[in-house]
Image (cartoon, rainbow, N blue to C red):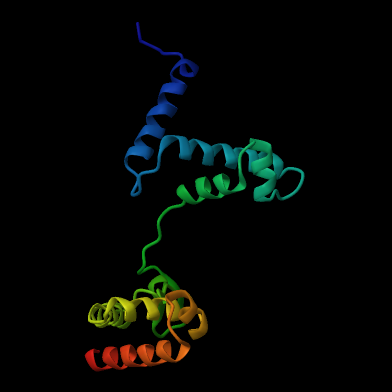
Length: 171
């Protein structure tokens, strides 16, 4: 007598195993709760799109969560894209994702300039450091600096000029 199993009884187990496999073998680990939020958001989006194209706000309102949470969850389930993925090819050189990504804050020039600036600042007296900090990092005028540290504006000007010259020589 052949063994037959009832398909609807084993369906949740099969679906669970497939989800577990996909979750555990994904390139990027995403928490189960975040993934569940994303799938709920997709379900809500599908349901709402029968009437009109729903916005993130519509989905968030329907789910009772913040729109940022919806965006974060949906971003978390996107497949990663390689930096070497071509985005345009006109028969000549291809244009890759990497060509479209830039970081103006972390260039080699900025990194070395920052180190040189910190080294030059270390050589200054505490008073000179304070004046340069107030003037260039906090945007104060020479008069404001003079009032704050109790010296004349002319003294602030001389100390600032001297400190900058010392730094230039060091750099």
